[in-house]
Image (cartoon, rainbow, N blue to C red; front, side, top):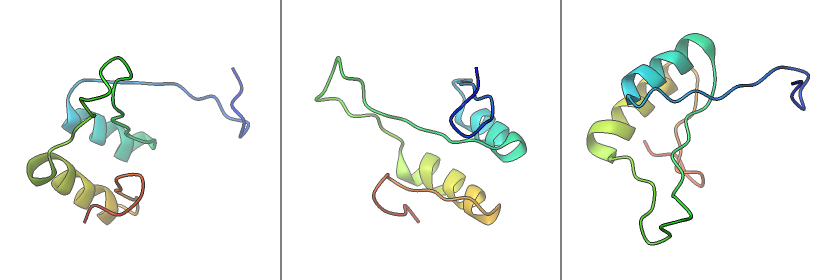
Length: 74
């Protein structure tokens, strides 16, 4: 299927943040962790100290961005 930008897009989820970030760094892409609409009181979560901050730092060093959706996390 052609995407709106004239490219094919696909989704991948490896269930390992390190592997997901490695794939993004080598192939490009985006990592999202939204909350589940079935449980609105339980938001999607990445632990800042040992997940979001270290991976965000690597992504930003490679020229990408790491954000909460509204502001930078670093």
